[in-house]
Image: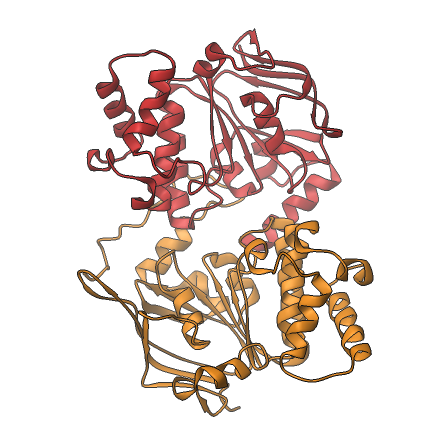
Length: 246
Length: 277
């Protein structure tokens, strides 16, 4: 079954059209990466899916139901987003408890105490962090809170916008392991934006390379590992990454 | 070859309600006209080391050292006024994020010219010429147009090149680059580092390259110091990093995913193994 499908998606900010004719089909349980340099429109695709960039035309379908342009609660229960910068994406004056509980209040879900504890355990956050503020946590702990927040409504699809690029390599490894485990345990579908091809190689099954708002290539991660991408621009990205890794 | 910089038993301390906290704990190294990399995680004290060389640690922070000598000048004995003459002209520093480090209300050309005019008097015509040449040497294609722009009008990669231009125009002897590319894309990263590398080599400067990225550091430096909790745990040649012995260094290397990744789970650092209380 298709978990997430984009058809002829054109996204604009005002007069500027950011993406052109983006088509993607992501299977249920798949982990899919969007790669490309800054300005290629990869984060904008995630924002449009999450409802943060409402000026789009085309079709966005998650688990069989189409998304409208407005706020859609049923959609939010299926699909949640984790942002790049854990320092900027948590409310500085809300405790972890308040941040995690907010989604439950909005959706009128009870059993607050148990659900918050359950989610905190699943992302590996000790109970003692529950009533702390973001500034009392390290970068890795904050990113765990951001992931926990996204998981509060038990979504099926997670949109990940560079989830580890603001973190140290050692902490990045912890968060990548966590994401991999969560996906296995809760049968999640990932759509991840990144410019780090090594992260793609570790966490994803397929990838799409974007350039100037268009998808230039969709390939299996096995192709990436073998260094077998076809498009000249994808090959260039791959070579830059390879040069840095060795 | 004489040493450009000698550091012996450098300590940086900050007072806290629970007593003094030492963030750099007695590190020593020497630097010639070479490229030295300092790597470590957040909180390892690598940035504090860079800042203490330029005497940029503000009170209540304290810097002490048995020796902190730059080209025969004892940096610890310099007055604030004397330090200002050294900063920029002899030692300069490229910061992490161009968005926060450039002056938003001055054009790029004016800012670069200011860096030069602070240290020497030159006729306006010559200043302009040097600003344009400098912008060209950091591979900005259209220097005359870019000189008239404000920082918010350029991309992150271009902003970082502007900052490098500003830091190098007084022709310092030592450049400290503190995470110069972590706010940039991989494709732009390589460009910016190549520029630093080329200019450092051409002018025979010393470079201290501070980063958490082991791969970057090993490809752009001659020698590497690995720092953890304020101490240097390992010192090695860049080419020999992959053969590092200290468990901390090995842990850092192992935790980086590879392009042809086959491991199902990445090893994470067991901090209890070597950390002293």
